[in-house]
Length: 66
Image 1: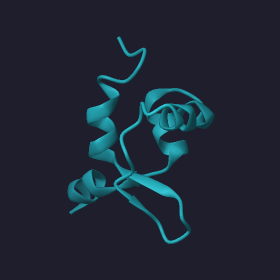
Image 2: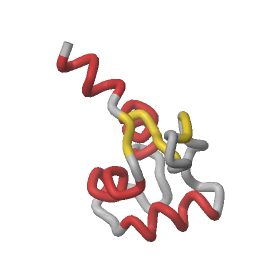
Image 3: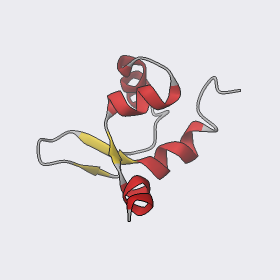
């Protein structure tokens, strides 16, 4: 079950930033400029969340990635 949980884990700006090695404000900027995928859902507090699999797939083709 832990591997499934890891695949379904919902990430915030901070977790995405940690994954790709940038600051959370950079991730927010990506979203403002349409460079980040649309959130998979918005949590009860109104914060956007992305599944880890969504971000991992995006990260290999993100802006500036080599």
